[in-house]
Length: 403
Image (tube, rainbow, N blue to C red; front, side, top):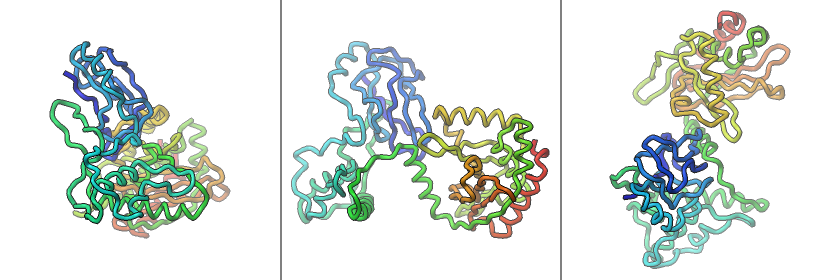
């Protein structure tokens, strides 16, 4: 018996995953819990573990291909004899671009308009149609001319998504409302781009797409900003003297200010404000091709030495792309420090969902650095922000207390 290995959902925002490499080859013995592949999620590179004892069997999805969650990427066979049979089963889809067309028997008509027929066409010289546009065009091509697309779910024209266990698993469904909305958005961008020079579309890495989704979700937050010029000299001197991360000391200073102004540790919900009992600060970190926000836990209640050890571990995970869900979820406040870029005079940040504020720290200059506090107006008001910045200034001027 062969059991399919599927692209796992390793985070709640993950729609697709990129298969980085196989750690085992067809015919290799695998044990339950043993790593058999590496998968890039929208936040990190994680190991995919075997769910059953047996032998890794093909066909295997090719490395560096991006596949939807639930897509079969390989198999685990109970017997070695099944490996050879599995290897001759044909190639595995390698990416989102490998979506097969619908069966010929399903194609009973043509797109009802020339505009529908152009869905999969290039939006400008040199552009290749997107996988989503081609899938939409193929779906519309299966609808007779003049017949409306019903609101019933449409199964995507992909191979059946195999389960991770014996129980059957239903493929993701796409509704006509979703198709129409996405097509409208694509058409608007195509029209805009067609007015300019030739272009090509290149799919963003999963991690960048995750940032785009999160920022778009945050756009609905009613935000206001308050900026203050505060001295960083005492903090920088202490960081150099004690060989402590300046960003870590800034996080401690934020925790002091939050303790004095607890609304900044709350979050808006439709049922009321969620008041958290611990200060967990998410700190923006620049990755090679994405933005990461590893979270320091209990910043107010733990020693600076303990926090420094955790921060080194988190930075190491960012570098190796080994952040787990617990490493970057659940922050109650956020900090973004661009002070290492001398050219940055001031900036502001987007308030992430689940927090009431984020502090943006620019480069220090004569007279101080600009600190911009972006706030959720449903939770805090302008006077609250002013008091927070006052508390922050006091903490920055007495940095020894932060240790």
